[in-house]
Length: 517
Image 1: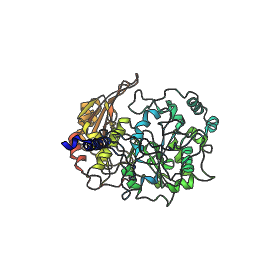
Image 2: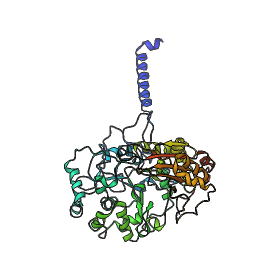
Image 3: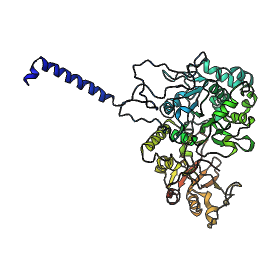
Image 4: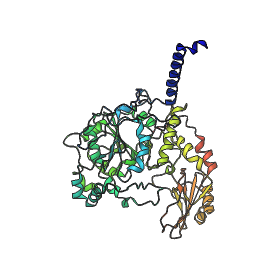
């Protein structure tokens, strides 16, 4: 104590207090952000050279081998805030994330509604990302969208004056408030043809892929998604590790269309091989929007246009097969769960709201931190997390989209589809004959059909009654925000015990292949 009273004591006290101050500051930081390759993230006070992807003078400032956009913010989050970023698996199990170029399509009418959460979830896991739109905008101080229609507006003016006027309006009325997501479940929900963004959307695909290959060539895989798509990167990158990016031009996605007009549904995500990008979107013979302008103007969607272009180059989606069922064109609440997909890995979901993105990102992160990380996330995991907790025997004013077998006053027997299995035998014919009359009768018919898991009773606007039965399990959603002319009455139900005794019995000890038929 005497020692502490002298000059040396004061010096010692000063040293101790300084050490405690530094140590306390260290504990307060708590989080030390790292990039995916293990390098320490840039300090918040360090000057950062940011790559916006495509500058106003249309000259990229970095090669494709470098980061297109930074994958992590330089500002660490408080330790109490959960990190909801998707987890990219280790290189030993999957394609390295550095071998992926992610291109995401948005638009002026949806970017501010959808993109902020995408930046925190789906886009946060990959180092190489380009965001395409119909308007160049700064989404943050370091992220800028690419106006992919900038160099093709003359083509729009010639072949589609309506689309051209919409595009011009975006740029002349740039300060208009355009956050209209119009996803299923929004209020009110409008037909696709009534959305100005749809009229521009179909023109983006060819310029987008040409721009990506011209400015960012060399990636093993180019992954395309939309601003309401979620990607389970752990699953997708593991699956891509089983495929070759260079053997031949190939692309994968959710198969859509029929016979000779098949294509990959865009919102479900599309994966292009390096061989495809190099052989089709490089050089003087690259397909252009001008070349396909007439077809595009009459087509409903850009993914259909892209399918036509690739078929013209003798490339079929999924090598001409049905392909993986793991690319989903719908959100979880619209997905039909059954034995066929139950144990298969899931790659994507589409038409997602911001809450959906967070839920799925948290699910993937929790899965990666559990002892289940050795296997991919499968449909069963999605069902247990997002569907089964909300199933009830019956919900009124709710549509679960049951549709396999429809019974009406004039249709009183089970009719099988030509491409499906034979119609099941139902002993209680009377239950089928009365099924349309009421929700209770519809339930009775579902009980009589041993494979039935959900039922749906409807009284439509013409006061016609029907009962629909299905073998898949679909959650569906509450009917809300309907138009004034929509007077339908819909009741839905689920065979909880039957679902538990059949579908839920399979614990998926073996993960099935993602490929479909």
